[in-house]
Length: 378
Ligand code: EPS
Image: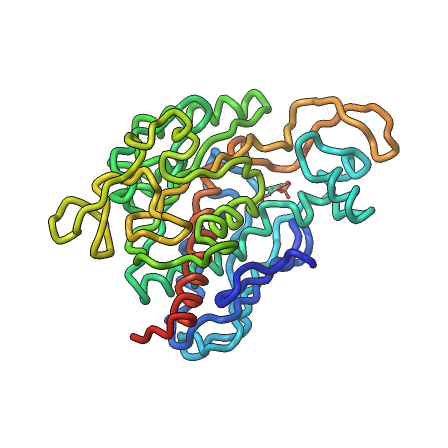
């Protein structure tokens, strides 16, 4: 039935559109006693916020969250949490020209085909604006996994167009390296390879001037995750992280570890051999057994192995373009379209916190499910 909820033990439900009054999330299943303030939420909301730099959409939202329920004296109470983020900088007139046209590559046509009506302002419900409150829920999830097992989720931009970052050890990338350049300036593209970051910024600016857009790849790494999370067979961790990332707008591919590269490998080349972690040969391992290499991306049989979870998502170039493109009207007449509005020439810099949030939400959910089923305490 309707797909506005995600997760089982830690469950989020969202409602909201790009140009409506705001977006809201209800979080069910959060343990009591987790410290949570508006300021905590703002850290990641600011990383996702439109208008944050010259290479993203210039819609200027403050994205100040309001905690409506579930938090008392700075800590979660165990009851359902509600968080609201209001929309303030909608320019719905920008969309008057296209209300009867389908933007190529956007969800306008499929929403109409499904519901027979759509909120055409911004992307309506299909807009990335909806992810605002997922990021807020992700902050809560990050808190849970940090407190429960020292878990940490950090994402970064790995590729924009043909520009690929060199990342030797994904698990060692810090949030600071994603957010700041070595000279202390903000890393507006969120690529921790400073040379490639500068090239990416230049390419994105070129795309904006050309009234075009460009795709890319984000890599998300979860460290500190204990072995044992994931519920075979349909709710394997791999399946749920995949679903979480594919539920974000514009995601066309998800891969783990070596990913599609496995097609070229022999088993003897692909297997990560096991060592006892006491031997010191498997850095970042959390269990008693680890692997010196991590081609498997931290999950075996859909269950976390104790090695870092490494996942990549391919994100398409923004479909809304100022450049004129052919399309059809809702009355099926051929026409042309130019999207006004304020759009990201590349979605990747703002995609990073969205993806981190979804991975953290899955990990919090599976941690609570695992504890519930195995009756583990402490
Ligand atoms: C979006 C269209 C634009 C983006 C929006 C996503 O909306 P508008 O034309 O109203 O500026 O700015 O992204 C956000 C506002 C956001 O917060 O992420 C779309 O069509 O998906």
